[in-house]
Image (spheres, rainbow, N blue to C red):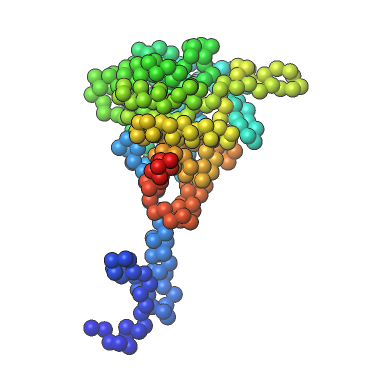
Amino acid sequence: MLAPRLICKFSIFWVLSKGVILAVFCKKSNCCFLRILLEFLRMVKMKVKFCGVEFKNPTVLASGVLGVTAASLKRVVENGAGGVTTKSIWLKPHEGHKNPTMFGTEHYFMNAVGLSDAGIEKAKDLFAEYGRPAPLIASIVAGKNYEFAKVATEVAKMRPDIIEINISCPNVEDEFGTPFACSAVSAAAVVKSVKDAIKDEKFKIPVIVKLSPNVPSIASIASACAEAGADGFCAINTIGPGMAIDLKLRRPILTNRVGGVSGPGIKPVAVKCVNDIWRITRLPVIGTGGVMTGEDAIEMMMAGATLVGIGTMVYYRGVEGFSAIVDEMKAWCEKNGVKDLNEIIGCVNKSGT
């Protein structure tokens, strides 16, 4: 036993409810160990699993933003993102729309890029150069149902962590008609086609669907996709299309006349859609749309999102905004006694609301 005189030099700093002593420290010392311990006790578990894939934190680069090259994807990861999504990949090169294709205000952002892409062959170079510093979600797009199956098969050969089916872009209607995401039957057919194609090639890659808010009931579309075999969802794509007019020139700002609307103003719609999808399917969701801050991301997770897609934020806060949002999420958790982000996923429904 320690002598009483020696015992009095020590104080118990922290004791768990079960009576396990976590630390003792000397009153006379500066005790850097104490500071380290305090940091450890305040640490928030940021890791989440989405469709079986682990992400170091819930933030994910959304498709269509900074996802053109492997270097840009790696830069996003270096600036704090937990994962990245490629631009939507076509089977063959697709030109998209002519400039100007985007502009923003303090309230919203509009784009009519038109899903431009260099095609599957160029995508192979991106995958090879990326090196997988964080999970990679491959977004795919096509104009026909059978083409989705073809591009999915080719992309699966490159072993992405997750495949995201983009059936919801609102600014290519003139080329391809109403998006597949506007019909439960069409959306489910695309999902089944992709899932069957991947299964036939014996690939075990989760398939998620990017849905549109521009429908009477996103829950019914999600339900149909889930029945067809979808492993999860990404919601939402941009709202619209919308139009903005140059008052001096008296004509639309965008060459395409209309474009998808994103940015701060659409967040309430995105939160509601995420909640609708999660409640009806209980499948994992990437919640995206209007996320600018850590508290925005927390709100999206409370609605049911496991991951939080971030895109337009880069226009407002720069690529450094990813690490800032992660820090803001940690600060919120520390302030509100949340030790594990998984605790808050879908919590808005767990209270009976």
